[in-house]
Amino acid sequence: MAELVPQELRVLVAVAETGAFSAAAVRLGITQSAVSHSVRGSEAKVGAVLFERGRTGAAPTPAGERAVALGRRILRLYEVLGAEARAAGRAAGAPGGVPGGVLRVAAFRSAALHLLPPALERLAALHPGIRPEVRVVRELGAGTAGEVAAGRADLGIATLGGPGDVPSEGLPPGLLAGELTREAYALVHPAGHPDPRKLPLLDWDENCGSHTRDWWRAQDWIPRAAVKAEDDAMVLTLVGRGLGMAIMPELSLREATDAVEIAPLGPGGPVRRVGYVTTPELASTFAVRALIRELRAEKG
Image (cartoon, rainbow, N blue to C red; front, side, top):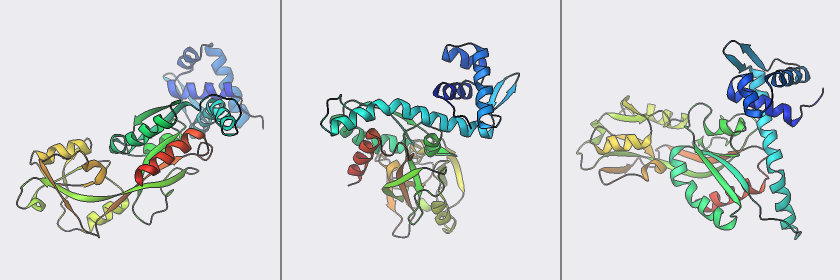
């Protein structure tokens, strides 16, 4: 089978991201007929239909989604090739520039606010040529790991489940993961409330995980959530206003004010593991390894 060349991969990615052959042509600065010809050629090479064509545009088929995800990852390796060669030459004492380039990071909100900044500060001091781009991604559905699998992020900060779970369990296949920290959950309630367990439960969709839910179901004092907020910051605000109580992980509680009180749930309470996720091909790159080192240093 003939191999796809970089330009064909760029066309596939552009069509998937713009949703139309015409829009992809504008993005790439080529004609629409050239885009159509390239996609047909790619489909012939891989032996599968990659896009469903219609009046409203083009949508990737399951085969197309996989091809586009891998295409992004392959194109990313082309982008980092120069930085990797310079880093290797510098390590060997050969002339070369400072290792650098863009490092794309996806993280859920509380990790982006509290876990990443100290690590990025140290990274910038050690390697000023690395330019982190951080996007906050909701940890729902594919979440941050899905961004890595799709080639839109080099490294993701993700929730890995509870103690005893395999790091890669529940992640898209083929990704590498490692634990960074463990968060104990705690009961948070309005300050001074005499009986917080009688308050309504406040929750948000990202506050999930099978280990946590199993623990919740075993507690007869925890009602069903009366209010679902957009995120953990909103839950904290509502609790501080006296509108309910919540069960939240440690990273989320770093924003707690004097309006709330935090009570530990004891040794049997739920624990959430937070870790990094990357791809096998990017795990050995200079920038990803450097950030993982700084994230682990933050844990220590």
